[in-house]
Amino acid sequence: MKKTPTPTTSNHTSDEANASLAPASTAALNDLPLIRIVSEEEEMHVKMELEMEDSTHDMLVKWGKKVASDEDYINIAIKDGLKHYITSDK
Image 1: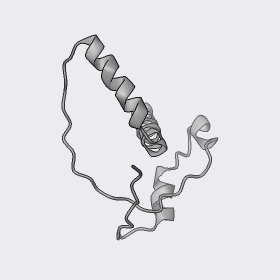
Image 2: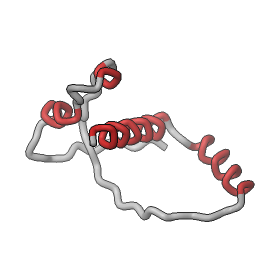
Image 3: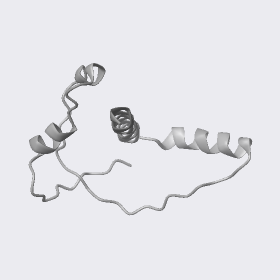
Image 4: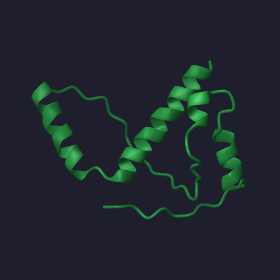
């Protein structure tokens, strides 16, 4: 099921938010196409640390791949890219 983003109000424009995310010194990231933030929504979630058998993990991965949306993959990629950029800047 795809979520419909709900526009939020804030004290900055999307262009200002995007400009603050744009790295000036990392050549590889400068090659990326422009991505604009058009809306955002906050979600409450609980992060859990889980232990399980390898077979259980494999089963959950298989199930997750069946229901994951394109937006899920995009969110993961953006989150990972931002984490990498932040840690490489230190």
